[in-house]
Length: 535
Length: 53
Image (cartoon, rainbow over all chains, first blue to last red; front, top):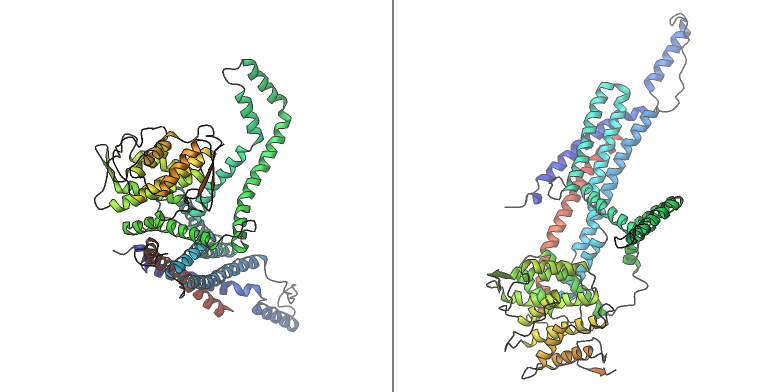
């Protein structure tokens, strides 16, 4: 069954309404237009009166007819016509933008005939990014808004024009226009309040974004508020453990400082304004960077740009497609990437969702759904890669907490995941999610991981160990014990794993021993050429 | 870099091309319908305006 929103019915309805609207507007303009010019009939009648008066000066009694001088159109007619012409201008402007929009769409839809599939796809992704960055869809949605504004102007003009002629008729028109306006505002508010409301309009989206943005600005201002910080410091010193005198002194101090309160609040108000300006500046800066590039950003190599664009393609397709075959090829391609610069944090959540979707829990035992083994394996690998990368690069990211929450909600610490066919990967993931559990790697028995699984796990854990060692918060705790267990477990294998894995395991131990690791070429964990200096 | 079907990246971009084609077709159809509506509407208004002046 085709989607109703894709049928031609709404378009035909709009066209009918548009035709009616334009016909009504034009008829009304024709009616009002003569009011802007001197009335020739009135002038002729005045001249005839003067002529009759010259022939027989008793016809009009004591009145002496004169030829009236035209002093311009009445003010109300000028206002009415101004609104009508504004309505016409708005429709013409929307037509102009619509024509431009068609050109923009043609440019977007045009495919490059040269280049490989990868280059053309990345070029298309670049254009799509531009559409999102430059709010193309918002501009397109503004066109009906302009037409709605034109309709409102017509209603206002009609009301004012009829007000001068007949109050009863004008009242009817005013009531209907007011009802239409009130209904429109209700529809916008309802659409903004509930996403499931069917009466969605562009205004609803704008209102929703304003409602969600303004509290952020308030929050920012409150965080940096002088008054709030003073009150917080006073309340902090008024803990139950301190004496009651401290509380009294603090209250007295606030009262004595009351003349300063106004000043402080004024400063806070200015800060709130600055927070609002900050939002606008952020948008302007974004536009500037799009136009002229970031001047302070060093020029990036073509490989890095390609990697970044590839990650954007991955992020887009994971958000867009629900096809598991597409997910499989996407994640297989992601798993081959060693450098994840400019990783979109949303990819971590996507990998987590796909992995959770492949695994079912039966009697507290996790098992892969039938037919989804390859997808489960590669999504677990990607989850480990991206999750560890984000933990290293942005430990304060909200996505990390979100992914932990999703994982715990899906499995929880009580679920047995040992039966999953990729135990190294899953233990590494759970090591990051439950850092306090220390029994990983002890119950693996004689399991031999594949070289890929072993390499990726070692690579991710070495980065994590390095980051935890480098971070100030964990300084002194050295490498977490569970990562060390992995290194020792891997080195105790017979035969030894690949050289890369051995290099990574030795690096983990060297980090724990407080040694400096100097990498001979790019990457901390991707090369085997490292130099360990014992301090 | 491998370029055959065994290359995960090449396979990914082949899937990407298909998904992007479908997405772009729907996106452009939606935008084009909206623009057509605007243009037809304004066209009528413009005809009436020319008649007026």
